[in-house]
Image (cartoon, rainbow, N blue to C red):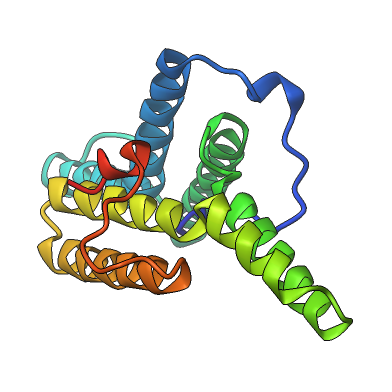
Length: 199
């Protein structure tokens, strides 16, 4: 059983989580990693423990599994499967409650929906020059490039160089798109706040 960290668009973010300090976010991410490890390996641990007890019962004719009958074995197996599902459900529930990044996907979905609304506005007679100027001055492509670059660095730090290189290539395309979108010249510098992420 795997856990999906991105929640559907429209999730209401609790007010209590809007201004958490970075230290608290790091602690919650560590908790998410630990719980994810529980979900990933709990089945292996249960099987290993059961196998060890079974081997001990066979070799020494002793232990909790030594006198297990066939019906008892079936009940024990079903109990272990049930325990596995309960553990996974509890871990997933805790991840949902403490994961500080669960709303990142909502932000991206909401942004896409807003862009779709702007596109629809053009169909209904909005002034193209005003929309073009707003999109250009908002730095939307610049911010997207900076985010893509930071994602590339994060993948590179995890050793996933292929994914990192694809994101770096996307950054270059986004920069050229921003230059064309704003009628800039190739080689023009981006804003300082974006450039520091794109080095």
